[in-house]
Image (cartoon, rainbow, N blue to C red; front, top):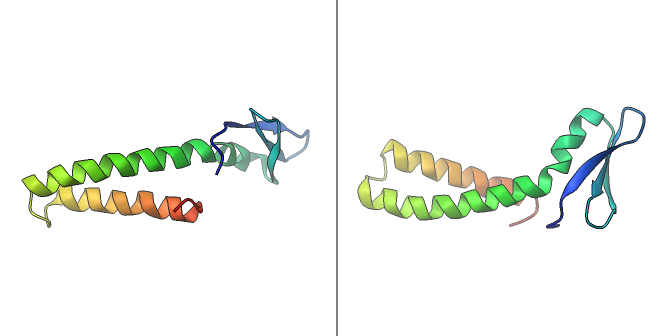
Amino acid sequence: MTTHVWHVASMGNHQGLIVDETTGENIAVAYDKANAPLIAAAPELLALAREFESYLDLKLIGFRREYPEDHCIVQTAVRYLEQARAAQRKAGAR
């Protein structure tokens, strides 16, 4: 997985080219230009999912000390933690 920043370069048609800003390497082609910004944001979104997972892991320890397991705060944190982990698995990062 890259740690570089990606951006969208126009291809002059209905497609978008995703390019690594550091290396200039072509990463992907979005055949619908509307999808290109989401693809270009993938490295930052994955980093955010990792940070969110770490944050929730720590918060959940405190929540479990303060609230019962069936409390909505604990259940919500558990659900968000599972979603962050699922997103990372889907991205091939876990």
